[in-house]
Length: 301
Image 1 (cartoon, rainbow, N blue to C red):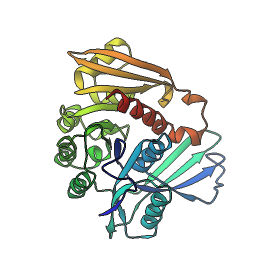
Image 2 (image 1 turned 120 degrees about the vertical axis):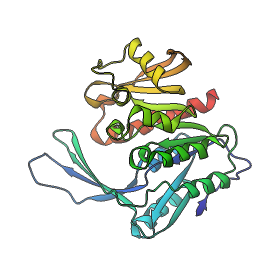
Image 3 (image 1 turned 90 degrees about the vertical axis):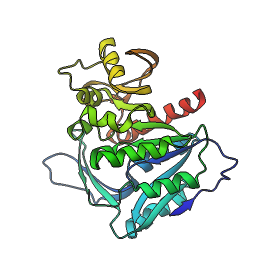
Image 4 (image 1 turned 30 degrees about the horizontal axis):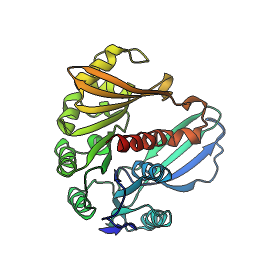
């Protein structure tokens, strides 16, 4: 394991351990779906773990990226990026598998995108490596574990449950971000809850995702008190960051505190301005909103 952390671990701000996919993105822009004209793809360092860490760092939260990359040119490029941008990490980059990559095709006229994801890569959410990372970082109260839900969708339930247990057995506050958004295709509500149990402090999710996990039938585009109460009854967390809007947008964000038996309090409602953004801005906007919330959450705690 390679450990890169420039600050003194004994005299630091609360940190956020970012656990998500580590990828090299190849971004292709096209004028339209039918023109067949593509610009040469340019590599960009990304993946959910690093994208979140970038936004945390911009607002002076100390992120630490956890994961595994390959002993290949893309893995070396990813590590170089983190060091150049002074983003701390605990990484295994000795794997013979290749570093994750994804091709993103943006169709400018239609404001649509196509994602081609290479699944056979180093993003294995290694449990032993996670234990090493937690021990190395000397976790203390106020630190955050920020976990994307990729392993929930891509690995067996016991593996995901152990990730939660490793984090919960330290002083971390645990925040999960439910991506992929169509996790309900691979996991039932019962399976999902058997992973998180009552060990997660905050769930961040799109409204559409949670309602499809619950599977209660047709639901309105915007949540009413009935839908929020239904969500509160079906997910065991202290707080929820709920995003919604028409046609997959996230124009509104609610921050909700649960108090048991379906009861809740809306702490904040904001209009995000998502629909007015261009395609490139939309791509990272969820991470921007998340970073702002996490900063507020650290102050709350």
